[in-house]
Length: 342
Ligand code: AHM
Ligand code: MG
Image 1 (cartoon, rainbow, N blue to C red):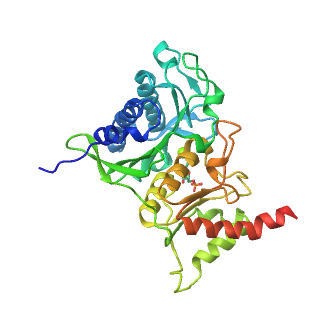
Image 2: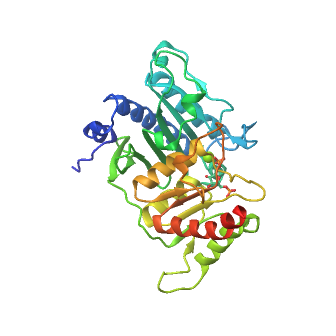
Image 3: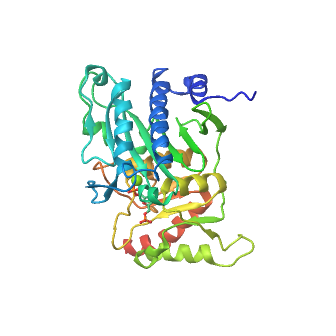
């Protein structure tokens, strides 16, 4: 019989790497894994019923149509965080405001979670991979009180853990606590996430670029020139690179993490700060990218150094292989920033 190492066994084995109370992280990741399995079960049967598939009828705070599974996943994660006792409040991409938990046990929780319950949810109806992204911080407010906005608006550099779940051809949970990145695949026959991708490293160079090129004419000169560069023929640098864009951030990020590549969601005329949210999407993936040896930038600034000003703040996002992101930043520097500084 093959002996798998389960997520829980792994976290317990490595819990001294987590500088706060041992056991806390184990409990939080256990809760995330439970909610992920529930969401996984629903996404797997998404084609089967009108109760799951399609639009919910509401729009979220960003004006985007919510899918039924968005709402389902949001509730599933909130439920486990509420009852776990380690989390004192959450911020979710699907909710207008952050949510402090009011029970005594939750008020004694030392952590907050910022998350996107179901990213790429416009892909559900067409059976394309989607994901959950999460970011965990120590609270700033006093233990025993209700969580406040300051607990939520923390720099990415202050994350104590972050990760994502990809509901793909298999379901995986990938996380970091700042000591490398490890990936676990859900073994459906035993219902456990098992270590399958230890110590994940993103190749320094890659051959894949991922951007919605439908936006290219609305993008800055620097972005246009970088995409031109990706498409040029040059044997020495193995160009042209392959264009791969699923339109599901977790799936695009996960592929590039394994194979090497760059994902770009730039500022455009229509979306001057880009589309992706700093707290729910960019910070957690930036933490993972850096821990795997990659980079994450707005094109100008390290993502994890940004001081968030609001919950649903958006930022341009360049993430992936170190040398590819550095190259893209050279183009931005040369064509966009130099001009804007004059
Ligand atoms: P969502 O959080 O509403 O699902 O939006 C985020 C998604 C990402 O998964 C994906 O990379 C991007 O939006 C795709 O946007 P676009 O269709 O503009 O390329
Ligand atoms: Mg999202």
